Length: 387
Image (cartoon, rainbow, N blue to C red; front, side, top):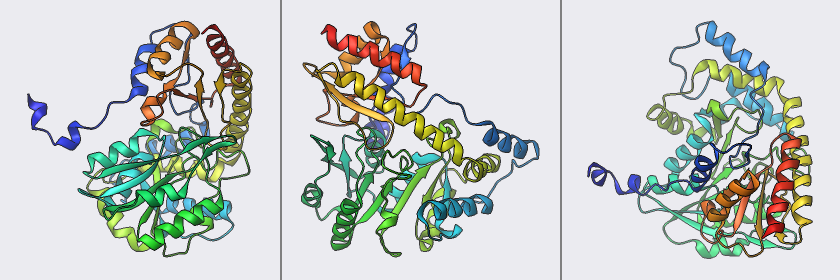
């Protein structure tokens, strides 16, 4: 077969358990789809109109690999507002979505024979991208505790080998909502410094934080020359998942390498799309705040409804917009997800899609209009009660 002659790393790229449930549920009537990691609002008009004006104005040519100057300046100004200190445009690099940002970060620091540590349960794309690059993803488990998910940094230290090149930290986390506090970030950073490791910091959900304006960040605790590459995206904050535009924040000395990697992959993001991203950063703060407020309400609705059953393990997330929960007696979340689609008309993502040891868990994306969240929570509570 032709496929047998492809690279083993490409053949081994895993299928998504999330897509299996979604494909099953799309054709069912009246299913509330909470399986995907996105909200239900379209991109705001002020963003789309900025892109449309640029498209109509002929901004359709090859563009700068690092991103147009206006967008890099807007990214620097956005970070300055969030962190209360100055950032330079030279620290920012525009990518084809958060996923490409992650791929480029991996390409910068690791390759065949290397290992990268990440926290699990985890969004599966990071481990998949590491494997395609020829390196080995090494999971370190978060553990469910009485007050949420817990990261044991000693476990990270124990997972380091001579082949380890980087620690990947997604906080707030998809799917658990675990959010590292400043002390945990300092401890991880100290560990990376001692062992000469890179950190890839995925802070895509940093604004979806229920304890303040933003989640704690490595930017709060790092020195200028620390080995940290930040990856982020416009997808979640500004309802731009389909646009595929993100960014890397890194030390300016890495700029030529990052530019080269962009050149040999996508050769840059369409300029008219970047104009939309500029509008998101400069005009979109009220929209972001409204999104977070709605997500907070939705989180409280679904956590309360499922906890009230007395049969669900509910750990209210500190950040992101997912509830990762378990139900007494359920050990196969994939099979249960199909049953929930059929009987409750709710679409969930099975825990098995997020790594070993999560088979009994479910991920529910509550970033939707509140009446849909209330209806889904009621249906799920009834399904749980019927078991």
